[in-house]
Length: 614
Image (cartoon, rainbow, N blue to C red; front, side, top):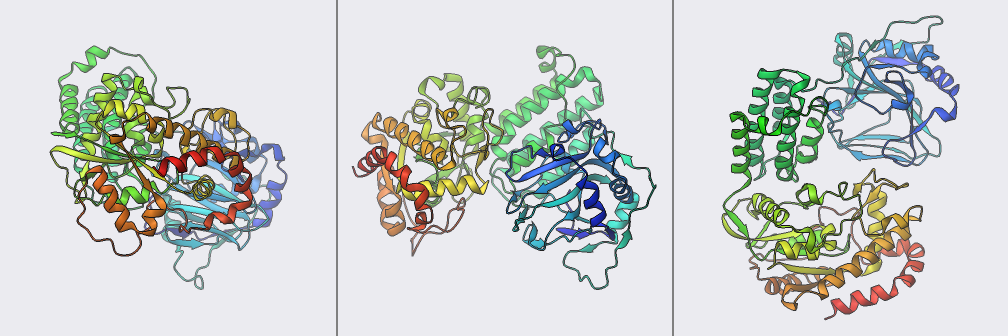
């Protein structure tokens, strides 16, 4: 839930030692892994759907006490003292020297619910961050925080941290306590929380959540969510196009709602409207920044994905699509997503991940001839059903010429054309030169050339030692998770591109996984580039770009046919996807891990160097 300040301490104080004694009675087998597999994170459900601990991560259904809560009188008293409707409740354990990675809660469930934290076992070195603000929540205190902002937790201690975490929509008494609470920036001196000690034999009533959402979502709630999201959007050239789609979608949903209400028989019509809107809007919304630092595409999907449950009669596709209101809705989509422009001689930067492609892309995007979609094209490509990784059995991100059927090729050309804008954030008409950078596309050169026969491919070469070290850092940072719930994969969530043969890497140490990613990508990439006419491939060198950016940019622009009219004075700024500041010898911090890998990769390293030296 969005709050006026990052953190608020509520005027309640609990007996942390008494709570620790109660949870000490729980068997270790009652703790469950974090649903994302985040290392060092585990939970013990206290309130879950139907009171079933096995459903402790579920968000839809009546919330009821689990056996663990029923045997814990003081935990029940703590929940009752909040004077709120109680949703999902868990004990959240963070192992020593572990973290909860930075994220924003964009799901519909969190839009209406605030998250209460009561530290039970903690240390002064546990730091909770929200936006640019940091607090240490002391044992027994009661806090809420703004889940709509970027937040992170680190436990810089060998001991585990355990918090009682309560999700709630609140209640009259709860919000009175929030109003009497202390913002984290206010002084503690005059703040006197009310002590809530354990009371023997007391069993106060608790209000449990029974309804989590309405399906289909009411017209008024849908309109409110859409309005909220556009109120959070930063200025961007594609906001108007997404807004046009959203207005048509809301208008059609209103038609359905006043005609059918929540009749289960109408669920398929609602589902088709939602699917159509998301299919058209998400590629446009991806890359539009929000004021909280998030992405409009992610938030749009999170807020609306449970607007309708996929149950009930299938209905007639032809009958529903013949309705005048839906026809108008489709026309609005077509008008917003098919502008009068075409892609000619697009330029695709291809390289293994973490080779500096963001730096090169952000630099070349300053050419007056370059048009971009503002970011990477994951959703734009994989949003086409035939190219979706899940529907393809998560084989890999590899795409060949045969995958570019006439229908797929036409759709992809239209999607790129609908999104491109120039360096001045204008959406031009006529012929445009697309500049694109997505590491997954290094596995898709045959496919992209089939879609765009006149495409140019810029191969960016970087010292493999630097690249491999940066790939390790990317996996460990948690910022580049592409398939966090990849079937058949354990350990750190899968990050970066999905290479052919990834299943054989299951259970291998991370350095070996990263080495295989790099080697497979590089060999396929070089094979595909070698099959191109020389006129369609260009080589760029990361070391040259860093050492003399003006000279390297001038050379590349001449090779790809871009004009350049801006001086480059000094080093280039850091790229948007930088994890830590680049240094030529930064890889040496991981030299011991890399040394055995470099020996095994020697043939591919030599091949890449020879290709780049042409």
